Length: 470
Image (cartoon, rainbow, N blue to C red; front, side):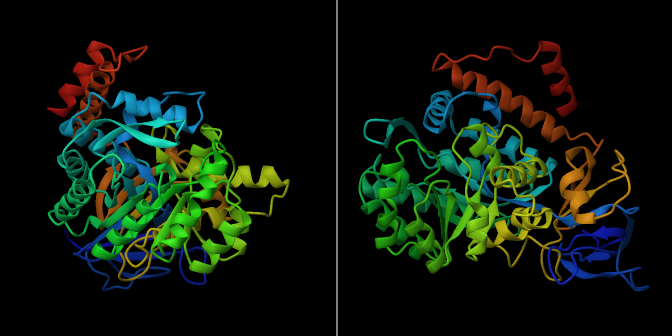
């Protein structure tokens, strides 16, 4: 890759004293930001000049909480709460094998990139396909796969070109302890085969919410120590069985898991004591407003967390419970829910949610040294957003226009490491092939459980996709 100078841009750095300025940015041949400044670029600015014609230049979005493989289940269980919805998802995956998960994950990674998300914390689908047992509030295994089932998801995400943290569930209640640890170890070894520029590290897929004993928290702590990795746990996400969920918080606390390398995903229904412990231990929270709204899970008290100086990030969650991987819609949904709930337009600002979906997420998942803002030395992961196509009118407040007035319709180009990975109007044969494979494989997998789509893609449409990908 050659060095590039982006200029004539309206830059939103998400760093420093200025929320925006007109200026330039250079990316070196290694894909890192080598310079940034106001006005015209220096005469000796390196590489190819890229005139952005007054467009926004901002850091790529960071989704601090995603389940990448789920794009084939959009619209599923549309009126169901969390546990009914997740059980439906699991039933639909009972017929899937490792190669199916490869294509599902590749399609999901490309979908995230086309939405301006350049880094993601990805909860892999566990090699244990499990259903939720309402009576015991635990996961019950229905089908068990080898570690390859998870490794192929890693391969699919690497093939998409997005940067990613790989989160792996231990499954210590569904498997013998030795087998559970061995499978986790295999995935961590496989991560060593991934391009280090894309591999942002491994992580524990915290699962105490669905466990029946405190030993799961202790085992997760052991894995964090063994590999020097983070942990993110879905927790108090829904009001269903809330007393049971809240009671399990102490299992994490007693195991010494809370801290700067730990994050709670969702955290919609915590007690006051739980919030205090998160604050005091320096733990983080990752917020999914669209998912929480779609599933009727509730509205997290984000202003309270921020006032307590808790690190908060944002994620687009499942493509099957937010149904779109759209960070612009996610920011606005979160902003409007908080303001509407409190009848207070000043409780959260556009600048706040933009920071949460970039540097906040990067901090919460432990990768802020590499992504999340436009600073020299960080990866040149960029989005170009055109407020003039379609035209959004005069720009009175650049940050407000970016968050409130722009969206995926304004997204012009996405760069990872200074290399263009998506551009509006440019066909992508890999995306076409992945979408076709995802569709066919998802339909086949769900059929094992007797679940069939109401409408299948017309045969001629499928052929068109196949031709484009050839």
